[in-house]
Image (cartoon, rainbow, N blue to C red; front, side, top):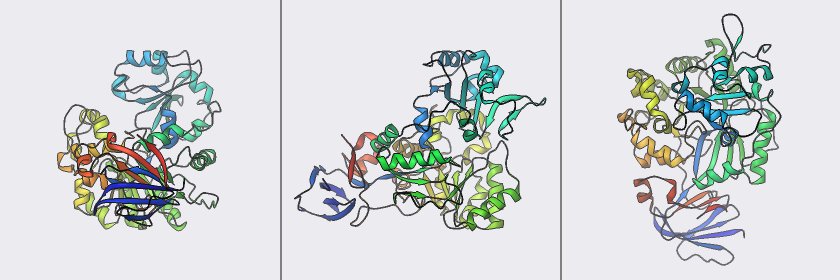
Length: 465
């Protein structure tokens, strides 16, 4: 079946039929001819462009599903953590995720041994920036002799068991398993109405990049795919047209910020190669460094800031002047806002995950999940952007709330133009669509994925209920 007719769906002009042929919208009208097409009765539900998640980590999402939960709300105390690790299935490596210091402090190898020493354990911090290895795991990956900059050492030169921003290095030293399958991730995204994703994993190893493309080709990951982690000089021509390379991902790690000249050279090199940059930036210090470098080296269309977790008010005009896009994740406020209230300085709380002030100052803004570190469900992120309510019930930065329509529109721009105009349902556009069981107005009154009836990607139904 190469044709699909969506009968009686809500569009801005009223109830219409939408005909799909050969992966694109071929006609919009009233009482369109259904011959040769599968017909779905829209029942007056809204038909929308599919959502685009502009920042997530696909293989990490897949790995997260089979990992031990090591942080709130599942684990809150050292005893909880010890029980969680002891109950891990199997008898080999244990992969823990979601750890935060409120559970058992700043762990090192010795402290982790006291919780679980029987099996090798690698425990990922909730931020995704750090792994903690117990003694057995440290020995197996050779931390003692490692020359990797991310391996933390104490004053005597001994490794602490903490490894910062060195995922690829660590992966090479683990038992060979290959990148995880993405069929469940693709299905979950379709269930949420997501038809395109930007994988923001930096410096993708060749096997990981090949696995992402293969998953897309096979249909396991039907979503259009935009890659930030491709090598800066990537010139591959073997990708399908629905897999694209975006800005070059740069991580400004707060555990070790680069100096001004190094960051300048990195950004200038990417620009020279014809690639804008996408810069991970979560602290005041990192943002000020980045803005100074952009002021010196200049910006190009497509340069973007990932997260913008903390943006001082005095920096907003600079963002606009430099024409930088901010790709942010207000879902973190609903996911871990209680932690921010406990650990972020009071003066900084209004600066967290800004939305309203950026829009009001004409700074291009896109929303995203940063899954698995934030909630994958875009409807939860949209809700968080409108309420900014922490798990405690407190509202963080009420002046930064935006409307549900504004939040929803931040999920609609093309993958290569986050913060740009939202896509629309019109003839000639790709048939990446979401059909709701109610009007858009009703859906945005209480945004949640339960309003989805059908997700269509490239003209094919990928989810239906």
